[in-house]
Length: 179
Ligand code: GNR
Ligand code: NI
Image 1 (cartoon, rainbow, N blue to C red):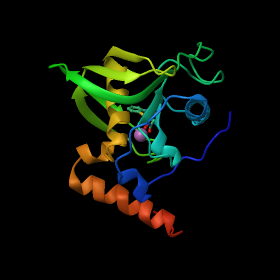
Image 2 (cartoon, rainbow, N blue to C red):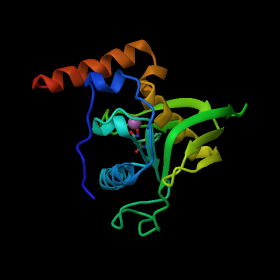
Image 3 (cartoon, rainbow, N blue to C red):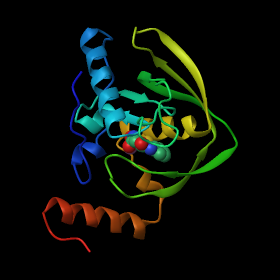
Image 4 (cartoon, helix red, strand yellow):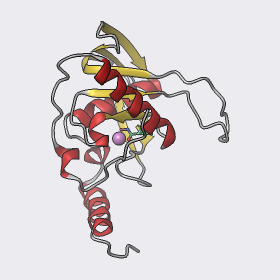
């Protein structure tokens, strides 16, 4: 397994739609393992392939794992990989959750999304699965599927706040000092 570099704003790849995965083979499983290693190391609870500059429709998640030195650590990992995920239904109830993104480091904002979604996807063996995701997993899976469509959680906040955070990352990329 290899830890990969995570791209950040304003990398234009983050705004591109990812292409479907054509076959689930050993090469794809190796990519899934690299994504999991990258996510656990970050640490994060989700990662889309485009965040490691691979614009394919593939996401990984684990809402349980914490690094052993963190509070509530040493929980067994429960990795989930979804190939070509499709949200087939959304629940009516909404939930508000403070989101962050490994591609927008150190910025957090509350986002309201459905608290239950049903996702259809291929698992790491290429078998079609359907899974009902609730609560935090519902939030994360929607955040990850958004990445596959070039959408970021800052698209749900006010334009003023979004422009401010984008500007900060543009300056940072240019090597300018940010207050
Ligand atoms: O690690 C992450 N935490 C998180 C918290 C609330 C809502 C979504 C997320 S996903 C994020 C990792 C990431 O950027 N995935 O794309
Ligand atoms: Ni993200």
